[in-house]
Structure formats: C-alpha cells, structure tokens
Image (spheres, rainbow, N blue to C red):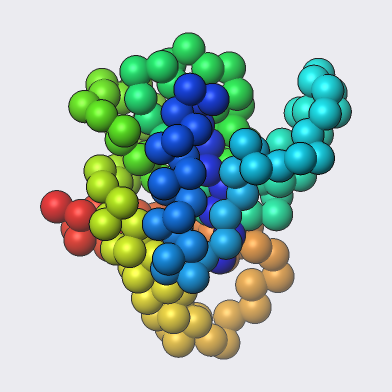
Length: 159
C-alpha cells in the first residue's frame, strides 16, 4: 500500500502529520512538499503528479476551508476516481464538503488512519480468499470489486 496525500500547500503541516500517522502503520506515502524532483509547472508538473498518483494505491484528501480554492486537489481526486482508487477525506476542521466528496469515507483524527489501514488490509485478505480462483487480469478489475466493499466496511467502523 502506498498513499498519495492530496492537500493545499497552506495545509502542509497537517499533511506531514498525516504522513507520520500512515508511516506509524507501516504504510508508504507520497507527499509533494517532500519531493525535490518537482520543478516547473504546466505539462511537466501535470505529468509528474499523474505519475506519482499511478505509483500509489490509495489517495487521502486533506480537506480544509482553503482546499476549495485549490486547482490541484480536484484534479488529483478526478484522476484517482477515474481508476476506482480507494479514496478518503481527512477533515482538518469542521468543513462543509462538496457533495461529490460525501460518498467517500471521512477520517477525522490521525487515530482514524490506523482504522483505515486495518480495514484496507482486512478487505484485501478477504477478497484474496473469496476470489482466489478469479483471474484479475488488471488492477482496475479488482478495484471495481474491492473499493466499494472497502468503503462500506470503513464507514461502518468509523461511525
């Protein structure tokens, strides 16, 4: 598992805390503020972000009042949604989420990260057992089955 942490630059401190919470659970992360290979903008930046997203299995969207002014966060969400990448919001504060984000599970504290990781791993194990005879010829085939199951289980445990 490798998690892409999507955020607005002003929320970088909270994003670093989120990164630490995932690493405490043994999960690798990608966080752009720690990426020294980013240079330039436009097409090269877009391709870089797409490449990093493609190297990740999940995306966590750090939501704050300032996120709604970001151009990149919706882009990253759209890229991940297109491939059924497991997605969750992390609420930095009490934020009114846009309706399109209400479908995904919401993490509210860094303690919820442990729940996220645990449910994600359990869901993967269950699917490996239940569908051991299936030929998942592509990641997208597996994600179409696994991601909705993961969302249901995670939402139940986060209540």
